[in-house]
Length: 311
Ligand code: FRU
Image 1 (cartoon, rainbow, N blue to C red):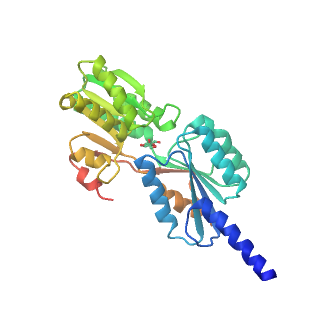
Image 2: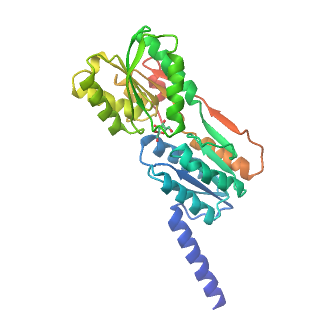
Image 3: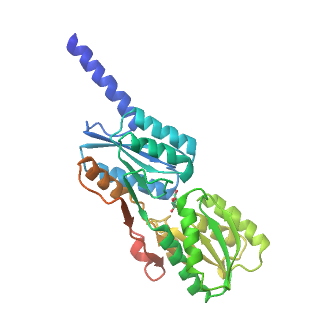
C-alpha cells in the first residue's frame, strides 16, 4: 500500500511536470526555463528549435519554453511561474526592455542565474547577455545603403518594435553608417513591430505618399519582405532596393529572398539558441563565463547568399 501511494505520487507529479513542459520523459538534474517573447515568427521558431536540439544532447538538463505572444505582462507572468516552479536557470528573450527589467532583476537577486538573449533589458543585474551587435549590423546596413545609392537617395525605414533594444540600435547604427552622406534622406519611418504584415501596410502607405523611393531598410527580413510584396503589388518593386536583417536559412528565409532577387541584401543575425544552452550548462556546472557573448554577423548579398540558404 505504502509503495502504491508512493508510486502514485511520483507518477502524478511527473505527469503534471511533463504536461507543463511538453518535453521528453527523462528525469533531469537541472531545469532551465526559457521565456520566449513570441514563438510565432520564423526567427523565433528557429531559436526554439536550436535550443531544443542542443538541450537534447544533455540528459542532465530539462528545457521548458514559455511563449509570451508579444505581450509584456504575459511574459512577466511566465517568468513568475518559472520562479514558483524553482527553475535552476532562466533564459529570457524579452519582448520590450523597460517592462521586463524589474522581473529580470528580481530573478537575479533571488540567486537564479539569468541569461538575456537577443533583446536587452535596462539593468546590469543578469548573469550573461548573448547576442550579435545590433549597432554594428545597423552601421553595416547604412554603409551598404550608401554604396548602393552612390551616396544619394530616398529611404523608407521600417522599424522593429520601438521598445525593444535591437530596433533602437539598428536605427542608431544605420544613421552612423549614412552620416557622411547628407544626400541620403529618410523620407518615411514607422514602427512595424517586427511583423511582416505591418511592413506591408507601412510600405503601402509610403508608396501612396511618395513617387520616388530608392531603398527600403527593414529592421528585419519579414518586414522588408512585406514591403517588397507591397511594392510588387503596386508594380514598383523594380526601381527599389530592399534590405533586411536576420538572414535565416531555409526556403522562407532571408538568404533565399536574396537569391530570389526580392531582397538586395540582408545581415546575418544569429539566434544564439545553441550558445544559450551551452552557456547555461557552464553556469550550472560552476564554470566561468564572460558577461557579454557577442555573436558573429555577416553581410549576405547575391555574391554569397547561396552559402547561407542551407540549414
Ligand atoms: C523576431 C525578431 C527578429 C529580429 C529579432 C530582434 O522576433 O523580430 O526578426 O531580428 O526579433 O529582436
